[in-house]
Image 1: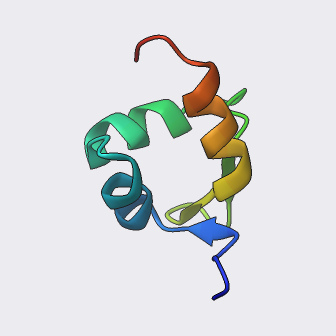
Image 2: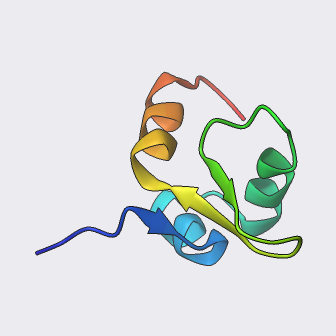
Length: 60
């Protein structure tokens, strides 16, 4: 089974149980290590970097 390397905000929210609004707020930061801005209105989550961010975070 192949895991997707990029997730939509909605997929990342379902995957991590972090709300869509919280993920949008996190990815608004220019220094966010796990976001890929595709266009002005579309952003994707880099799964491996997102997992690393979650594993190294104490709270959000």
